[in-house]
Image (cartoon, rainbow, N blue to C red):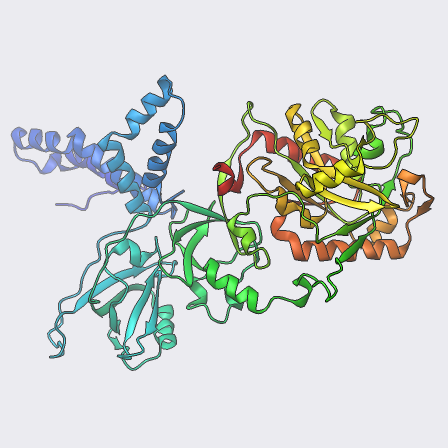
Length: 598
């Protein structure tokens, strides 16, 4: 038989060869019956279809494709669960029916298996040279791709053996189901590891590529994995496993930044949890320090600056003097809101805040029972519903940063949507003032009674008169279906973090010293506007103090902030703030889990 032509290239070869075979073989066929047989056989549609599929797969494989995601089946299950909790319509019922079909489930399962390259391992021949003292031995072969194997090891203190310390959820070892915690490791690729340190074994694994063969003595007890509920946390500190001297395996660690959302996959280990980034489609988990372990570490190295001042022996109350001053960048706004700006848009008095007096009581979450050592806060996804009250918006920042200007711009933008609280005071009402507009004027006896009843968020005394923000004034704004804009001291925030208010805290941060000098050169400080005090320009010392104060606020309270906004240019900062508040009403956000329960 002569050599057969296979076409001009590899891409077209097999299918064209199949189609041309009957014609090329015709001169060598002796009978019409044989020719008819060949034509029928090579012309079979099912054979042509298989060849086409083969060529398509070969072409696709040469492109080195990578899966978009590896957990389609899990995603489908999560979607089914979410759909069951939503109002039903025709489309949702149809989708639920499709997702429940066994054929679709099987297809998604196969997809995930192929995507993860989770194929059954090909075991080598069983060795004949078993040690006499070995009752049972497992020979396991895993294929190591670019990802780690997803297991950590340690030396058993009693036996000295190298044992599996933990299995990372979703990793190659976990997916194989062949390696378990407590298994004793004897060999790796034929290299005995009984006399080696864990670091040396890790080095052998790191240098191994492709298939890795383990010789393992199974642990005494192999517990079946338990399905844990989904738990998400907001991280309240920065973490880099490469800088952690006590993490079991730096390569198995997960780095994160303050404010990241993590899904906790396993809490089996009291010291090291397994977690992954909430937005990460990768199934493999990584190690992070547990809440209890990290709290102990933070407590041991807590700086002195975080310790609350102590009262002295004669029981006099500790007082912290806070300078309350205001920027005025544009004085031409006197009649915009019938005097509302006079008190509602500023903290316009110097307060001697007496920290020994109680403020508004709130239900304390677990996070704030250990507020000095913030680590993780359990959260859930939440979206504002039209029939609910708006979330309280808290703005914090150093004096002079422009909180009042930002609030004023929001009110100018939409006074029907945004509102501010009206402070309470015991000073006499002046002739041009209206009760409930500039201030709520009350007697000193009533003010002190409300203080005893924990109704004041913040309060203080200035020139013999009491001033403060009553919690009812916040409720009054929210009851009118408005977004309440409130600026307070950082130490007040945790008392407002309750189910009732669901506050969103935005830290307004100053730019660099050079930008402050450039952008605030025409700004003025009104030393005490309530008493029509003198107006003076900012000095370099004012800018330095603003930056220093902001750095201290952020260092001590960043775990309380939901967002940080730099007020470099007032117009730009206002647009960014407005965009944040718009998103807050239309998009889901993470909130503490205890805010969804009474």
